Length: 249
Image (cartoon, rainbow, N blue to C red; front, top):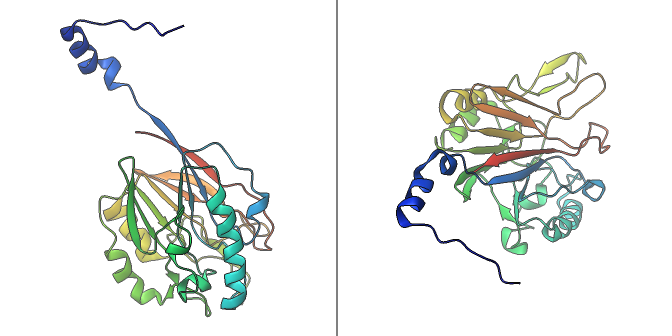
């Protein structure tokens, strides 16, 4: 049976579009934030969402040849997800990407953000892989140089993705020597996020859950929701399934 439509007078339509009913009309869009899957991606439970954002560390091995094999297995899975928009930001375990063995054109279903931005449904999204220097991994910079890196992130970003956390927010780990809990996030990143960028969401990973320490989590401070979406714990076990955040567009 054909659908029946009702034609309204032009002035009545104008009243509807300008009235409170129209102003309340929004389109909810769901984004799945994940990070640090470390070869365990196949065990994730896939939610029904409009977009997925991976904040880095798809692989584990540092050796670039072995890392390439791990990463390509991940991107084969990631590209095939039945999710319209797939965004990826590398991490310190993305050595094959840093060395150019894997490039964005290899996986055209995925939007790579390597200190770069994109826009989706009016949301401005910026992704950066850089973290404070720690041994010889990918995309690491001395803490003294990171402020210059963060300065190049625009002010008007809605969703900020960095592989590592800002200092003091879901960034606790045991000190290598003393084993006492310490905050290891970037102080200069926190300053830029809280004082200048002020995104709606700042998502990251890098620092995992470990014995007696919980870093996976979400909190709101000022206008920003901070999310550590690390899926694996420090022993490489898949313990978390990321976060689904709904945006009204």
